[in-house]
Image (cartoon, rainbow, N blue to C red; front, side, top):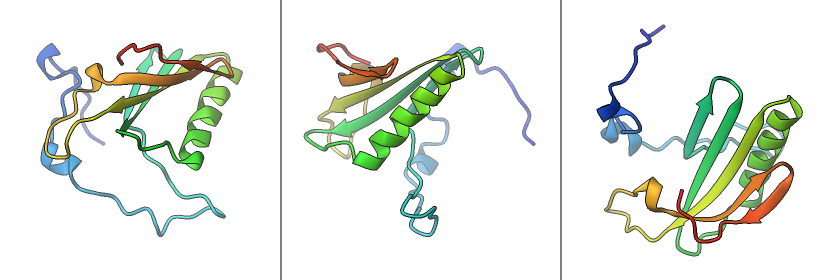
Length: 124
């Protein structure tokens, strides 16, 4: 097990191994019925009480049905357990050779307390 340490503020939110971030994971061999794993683009947790999830899509790419269903079920399960959770779907038009600034991406919609809400032009 690795050593736990507090990151200095200059490293918080920074990808520490960008060469590994580019390494794809092939999930095709992992199946539960028709289900396969999905990834989570961003996740923040506060003291085991608040959970915030981010998914980023480029341009007009739509969220796959199964991935959106997984996020909404996860948020609902956390809420049913007496905690707070929200899922933000964010859009960007960053080219594939540029780093995406997650904070500047526009929230298309978000899911909270069993309902969808429009992003209203806000950024992540």
